[in-house]
Length: 113
Length: 125
Image (cartoon, rainbow over all chains, first blue to last red; front, side):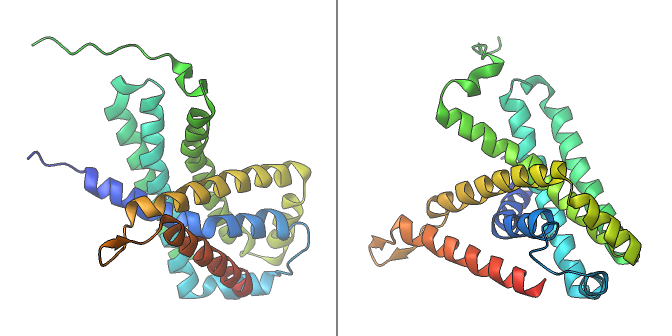
């Protein structure tokens, strides 16, 4: 059987899908709606305390990285389904490399903040 | 060997019926979900720098444009969650003896866990 990278990217897609399904909606509600409308009282000091906790950093890193790989895999097939089959190789490279770069950047940024 | 014939498919194939439209919206949801986690990272990095940054960031989030954007993002992320949990019985087949556990139980357990996780995150933050 030919060697394939599909199981790796599919697993990351799947893991990202699970993580996104469980936690993204509540984060959208809190950051995008509840915080600006004053439903939750988050202040500067509690944000710093929260995000300086190593567990929060690991959580954010895992969330961001897996969701980016989830996007990469799904968006790749979206573009192919929209008729860009001929460019599939290029699309795959751009998508997965973006996810790798995003993962690297978020690791660096969270580590050094 | 000659190439197999591929019937040309029009670009707008997904606009033919509702099932296809929802499929395409579900696929596009990944773009909004990914943009949002990057925004979350941006918020954490920028707003935690100084109290002034924090206030400015929250003030910007209050603008109607951002609220509307976040309502749209919420719509897409809910579409992702719902379509994902509805597929769980297909992926996770639990057997009890000869019997297969009902789909509604598997999906229901995920919905319940979703609510619990959301409440826990709300309480932590």
